[in-house]
Length: 457
Image (tube, rainbow, N blue to C red):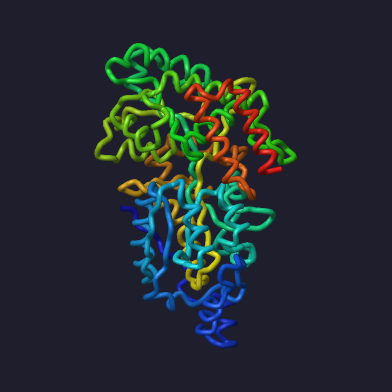
């Protein structure tokens, strides 16, 4: 397992902490943290920093998703080593983390101090007072947080709501296209598809020839979840040059690009590993590791797993490229299909400790170590420095290369108030569409457009 340097964690009080300590000591700072607006969603400037030694022996409750179990275990061990703090982990399914955090805060249980929810849920969590406004802290603590180092196209979508910062990026989580070199070679294919139409044509060729042997052209994430089926659609929307919202912030799901993306999704499902409606990342990854699919759109950390996982049969037999393009668009574009940010719970009584932990969990050193950790952490780049780190570049040069598409122009989901519900509406209609129950792609997206206009305005 990679080890983490400790230089990014302050070894003593900062200048501000020393000044405040002179007014009443470290104890006063901790009391201020305990009294900081429980449930208000407001962040107290009085707890910007404290002596890190004062954290020793404390506990911090963290909420994460199942696919971050490896990263959570790593963070727990490293933070205990560096701070003497016990990280108490609660792991929930990826589509339940936002509602779990909001219910915890609104009920007054206040079990959680920090959480790493899907970035799309930040607007709703902020509106409910379930997470704290971190703007003043981030501004005051720039020297340590280094916000300018976060990947530009990720930083705002993963943190900014109505001009205020409510989180810091943790897991970059973009999709790229992986391909099985052995399967392609059997069919005389030397170059992976550059367009979504080529992707469908090659997938069909392989499926038609090998489905009787249990081998298929592709695996499509089709389970009815915004982070799964919604991601498959977002990949195509980005490829066809579309967007969820237009330049004025209004829904844009009836555009030619949006409709073409949905049509391609339906065509992709027709050649996919069965049954697409039941394929989540666990099923899809399993098919990939067993060498049963030629293509899979997946998070970049799949390359790490392909090399290190004990059940992988595709070690050294895979390649990776940027997502295909479609229509008139000729420039590959990253899709921020998932993506998770560290937030501070609105009702925590441990704000100073929560801030210290988030600084650690989102730092260059942490992200760099998680990218190459063994066993794999499931974490993708969130910072320019970790994306360009020597270890990542040396061990996974192909992954490093495709991840550079996240630096600018990436497609982000809406993350304003109502975005969580909007994502569910889209996913519901897409599920009907790929099942042959939603009419045409244009009709399905017309219904989504109408609902989004009501939800998002």
